[in-house]
Image 1 (cartoon, rainbow, N blue to C red):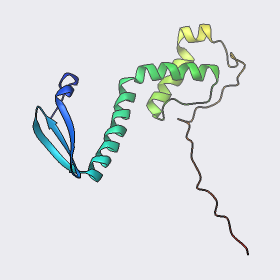
Image 2 (image 1 turned 135 degrees about the vertical axis):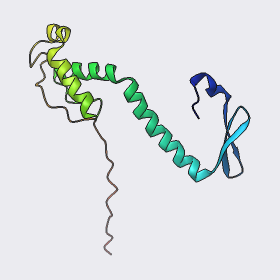
Image 3 (image 1 turned 90 degrees about the vertical axis):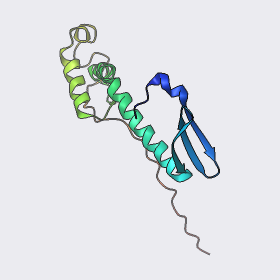
Length: 131
């Protein structure tokens, strides 16, 4: 079933007891246990972000090309095709080359871009108690 953005206002998500219901025009599409609904929500979020990246690929390429041109070592995407296109854009875009000149244009040495930054939280260390 394909639901257009205009039809989204006709979609209703309800909770009844320990189940989550999805209705379209008052007709029940499916009923899920709460755990499955949470898993589905996470999956929808991930796929939605991937679709957003695809829809905004041209803008991401240009923004990444600017960052690459000034030597800022942060990637806006971890997709190799977007990063490769951004590298080409940074090297060959006439306007970028005119307004951001040379390797050290902003006083920052160029570095290779390795995808998106990630913050990892390490679990707290166990403290031993010696009595």
